[in-house]
Length: 165
Image (tube, rainbow, N blue to C red; front, top):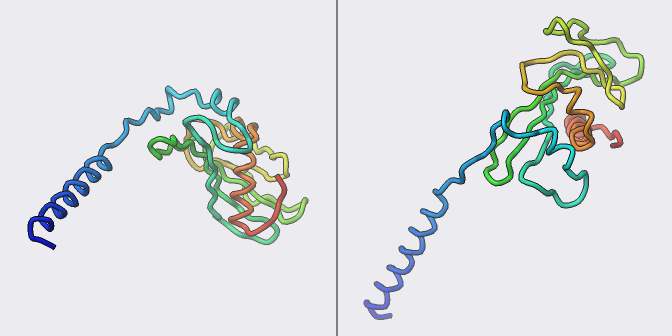
């Protein structure tokens, strides 16, 4: 190769690298503002199966808090994610008791919030308390199939069990 050809090839390579670096550094402006976004409207139009549609997605993250004989205490957090930017926002967070058998004794019956009532989900899991203040109630969000199915998948993965959707 001639020295002139090497210089031209190096220059084209450097220009290509620099142009792609500038392109990646540009960040898209996020419109994720939990007070402005109509989360309940998005959830009501969100499809359950198939290819995801829309600008937002929902997921549930679970962490094991306590494991006792007959039951497990899990913290479940519901998030919304904006697909364009990947930014997330916490919607709800609650502590849930997942029983190994139907008549297990509650791990915790005294929640941190005075007006909180213990309630059961469709599958028998008991929501026994909240762990932080969040913009939405866990009970309201679990009424949507998208969130409920994500909760079941997250707890199945965490506890290595197989519960049906």
